[in-house]
Image 1: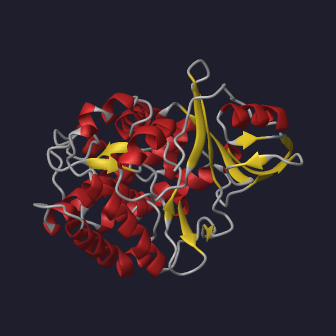
Image 2: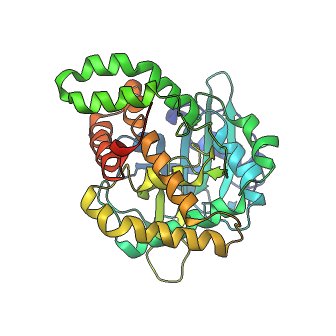
Length: 353
């Protein structure tokens, strides 16, 4: 696997030109004996609110040019430096590569923007169309990938000794949920009668409680490396049997309870009917996979309790998304599903004194 190396800053899509790519690839010995003669760009992605951050490139080279990476590539922009750090320092130490190859990356501290030149897997893998979930078997395969990822850094000292230093407050779920709590009064005013008195009271009771074990920094039990945005459309499913499944978009990686990834994946994105059929079987499968991958002293009861805490945290994600200006097609549906999951899993019965 190629290791990402720092190169000259690119912060806008217009800077992706044959000349700039030629200079970068030559400087890093990925292109010899010629140049990039043309770059064809095409937007891609079934999630409309995220597709502008990614461009799929097809390169043409001059006669005699020798390119040591594929001509079909993905160019991605991301806020901050977390994703280059993941590919440079975290990924090479992980036991299984369930992410695309990163050929080059760079970070501009002035603009606080990084970019990555990644492997294009669109010919061999696919995403299901957003917001339609994958079938059960693909969901199960995605949970297996998460179990291996979580098990690989389960209570690992590197989480605090190394990784934590590369997590800014703004780009962690702790910071995002804190911002959601700060924005709560403004959100309530905006929602007006669109938020029922009962649901407003649920929010207020949770916030007034001295019991904040659902908050992302409350990590009394086990913790691990999280993907941080583990919805099913960040998984690339193989078109043919026998190929690996890939997990993409590593800029949101975080440290926390493994069940936070699961609650985000299932409880925030699924409606009650689908959860009623598949939530418990998938969580039980995930727990078995954790144990099979070496995790010890983590019972099913502990996982279920952590999952319920993740469901409470989910209630504040739509507020953060609203505050950020994310499209209502995302946060409005999340708000409804978050409350439905909270109510289904006994949130009303929990004591918040």
